[in-house]
Length: 317
Image 1 (spheres, rainbow, N blue to C red):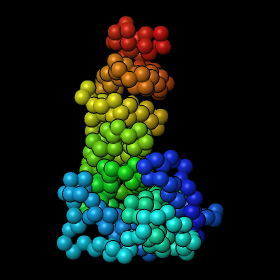
Image 2: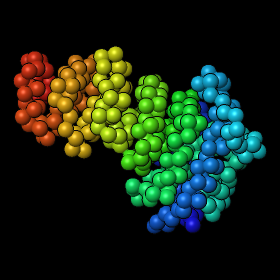
Image 3: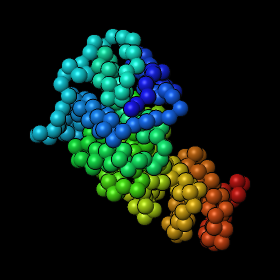
Image 4: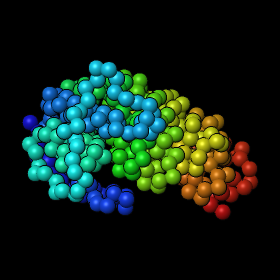
């Protein structure tokens, strides 16, 4: 039921400390044909790999998470391998085999493969997902153990594990945007995303988290997006990367046609204009330009209430 897979190097740069690029599982063929059974197989295989990896992490890094009693875990033979950079195996015939076949790689590389395969499965399929396929992902994400795995991987110390986790979250939310599961899972995942990768000093991880936040915001109901994801990023106590992400999220909401409350939007723009980061100040100008394009009267009233310096900045003076 599935197309064959091939291997290629990822487009994103690898961390120099890892020493070599990690191949990414890629689709072949013009279409992807998956069944609900194969989706369940893929998710089960992924859970085993992620669970086994998380259980090898120090308790502090793993957030104290360990597999719950009765939770299936992968055996060590599933992912244990020599640390040498052996060549990737031949393309397997199914997605389930694709994940199992990367056992010749080290633990963290296996996790990157698993996350990348899952992300490609979501982003390559036509959205929204077919009900039978979406139900498998919904059930997977609805499990609290899965959410603990994802949130632990989002704060992983390895660049590629953290960025791959961000990419998966960024694919999950749009794919399941109409699912109740997303609304239930959002608070935990968004909180970890904001406090972990988005606040990271690692530019690659922070960039991936910023892109992910935009996907999350666009996939949730507007009120929930503003409360969970945008409000924390527009506070004066937010870090520069968080403020930049908040500005980007608001900009994308306006571009998507959402009507945002004028008072908090104006307050956010003024706060961004006074930011010490030039990128955040530029984002504020772009945000206002988009606002005036969709709601000229509201934007002009907000501008008239601003100070002289702020109005000059909006004009680009």
